[in-house]
Length: 91
Image (tube, rainbow, N blue to C red; front, side):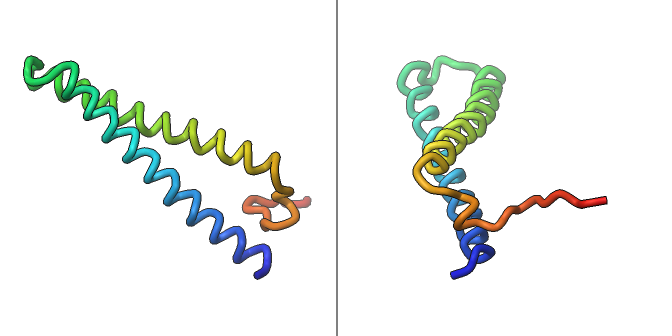
């Protein structure tokens, strides 16, 4: 496989990993909220809490993804296997 195919496969795999991580954080957060808060929360407060959990799961998934890519880049030379996505234009 060439660098462009490796890059496309890496982006697809990273996207799937990021979505699965976000869903996992969201489900764990919902489970924790239901365990500790239960049904004692009003509808408005529950919506705000769910919105905060959703934004937190996006941020948490980004944090985990960033750490995973950082660890992966320490282990392998990314420039050797992947094509650069953004290139600089020469004037």
